[in-house]
Length: 364
Image (cartoon, rainbow, N blue to C red):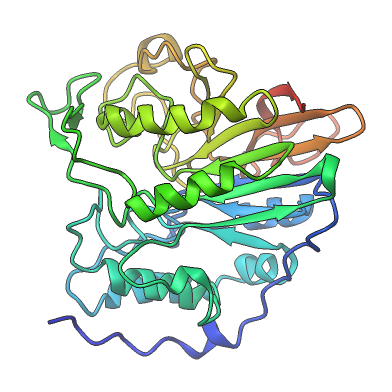
């Protein structure tokens, strides 16, 4: 049977969270990021708090607490550690935040439908983020997918937060562990396999029918990437095609950008033919530098070959930043440095929010 849930710490429930933005007002700025190891310095919270975006999106691996058993004591300790960090406490009081889960906050590396602690981990997530008992995410036997809308008619932004863990079918293990393009998994053409429940697909279809000028779709794992053998939508080609097919008719009227994390590198991606982009922002605290797993020293040698990726990988700790210029109908998306590095610029300013890469797209 299921292990009884550990009593949640008192400071979770009594915590003050910054209120979400007023629904009918336009948003101008959003931050997004993923993969924060609570045992490392979390000064990135100070960086984001100083910028003070209208909304901050936590895209999973918000803590690392893989569970050893059904009590999930390690996951609770991870949340406790995050909740006692002064930079986080300051951010929580000042930055409106929304969140989803990835594998490590679901209690297992590469967690899928067979994850035995998914309900415990889900409940802990909802409790930590003070999600009310009547919220749709408290649904039984399915994930934490949810959606939000802000802004008046011509400045409407819709944020769709997927859950691609709770129902995600087992991926096909690689036949050549560690090899480029098939490091852990290879694509599986089994049409029965899925990344989301049928109910989540139905829900997504309804949301895509709603009018929006900008639509952000948060998938904790990469969607458009065609260069990795780690977890991504490429591993279930029918599911990915299904996603592209439901998005395609909406792309002329709505600027659509997928936001993802998980990979411990940052990058921009574009769909092969459609006007659909993806930005991966990972990680807040422990991005993979050149040569960490081999002896390469530059992007040419180290970065995975991927026809969908637009630039080199970002390999310093970073987060994503979106600025909406409604007057000029432009959305700019940047990856920014997450913390002050040793170097300072000529003026002596700390470079904690240095823009590392950015792209400007039109808003219909």
